[in-house]
Image (tube, rainbow, N blue to C red):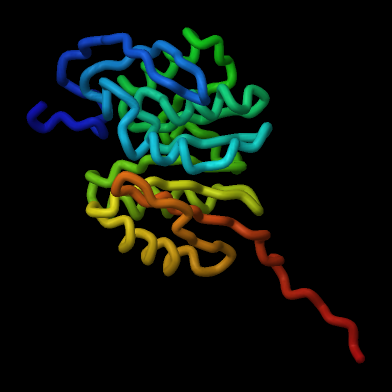
Length: 215
């Protein structure tokens, strides 16, 4: 693909639409994928590890798939939580079009496929699930996580899957240092060379000091 990457905004490579059969949320379904998006021929190993090692999503509220690709995480969330609103976010316009096609084909009307800047600023997420684009580089990746993890609702979790030999342990240390106050960072699972990292947001601290009664 030359300089064309799955994180390109408008892939220049041929679309080459294809239909594949995959298992999402315990169901065998047929989806449409294309060239110029991440893992167009199957559910990639990292996403499979993430889907196998995360709890059922909250039944309502806003849920986020960050870096959605053609949609395996977002579609799984939408199938498992039909009353929730699922945001499938990516910079790749072709990927967003595929998510919309797949959601419509599966009869899912609770999926919003959107560019990052098109997600309303006031929305807070009950969960974030992501196989983040590690290959965009450390600075870009850190900026991405610094933008979205603070949008977790109180007492809510983000789940990331990262390949061990692509820096999962150093990313865990960075997350723990960056989100030191009001969050906890855990290694939740390991499988097939991947780590699943869990970031828990606790209740927000009060905006003003609480006045204690005089003794």
